[in-house]
Image 1: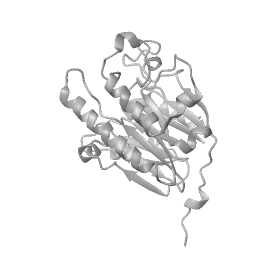
Image 2 (image 1 turned 120 degrees about the vertical axis):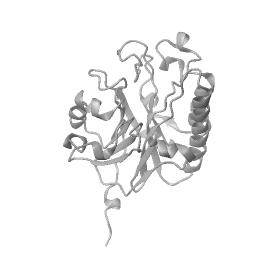
Image 3 (image 1 turned 60 degrees about the vertical axis):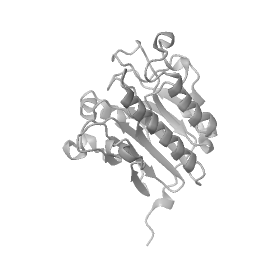
Image 4 (image 1 turned 30 degrees about the horizontal axis):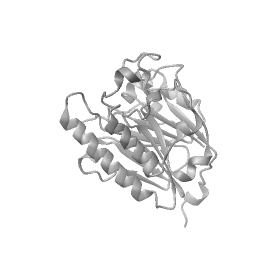
Length: 263
């Protein structure tokens, strides 16, 4: 099973840069896309709806943010939002449920320098996300939650770590949020489970690969999938946005037979 996560900085612009052509050449079972910056009904071109995938979108009236998920096999159910008060209206989460595994596409709120309100909202979001993940870990199913968490967890996840220490996205408080998800709750950073290299980044704020790199894009998986992680990669050969697609291969097969309608 292969899962890809990609933060698009606007899916229409990413399409023009060749994202969907690249995507069609992959063997992914599930593709999670974030930061669409448009609404589904405005996507008129067939390129946004590849015939080999079932496509699902969760956007909002403003056309900002927005997330999507592409599934090669037909999901049992689609869930939009997490019930996080105002956050659901910002179109930040969509989930595809299969019989024994669920895939989520998530976009965390953006906080800005010297903006206490935006930082407070980000804090609230991660507190609620922690509570949600604590609750669902007791369910008898596995979870793969992919997306842009807007946080770099470890020093090796920031190219200019000493210079950027304390910056939004790399504060001690934000890094502790990730500690809580991964250590206290037992979830797994799938990419780091497979790849330990120090020079693996997925986001370049300046848009120049090789300069000021951050790893803020994750696939956070439930404990039961830890031993199934086989390989992780970040595609850097061509730029589709300031983020690069993150791919993880799992030794796990989605059982679609149990998801077929019963009559």
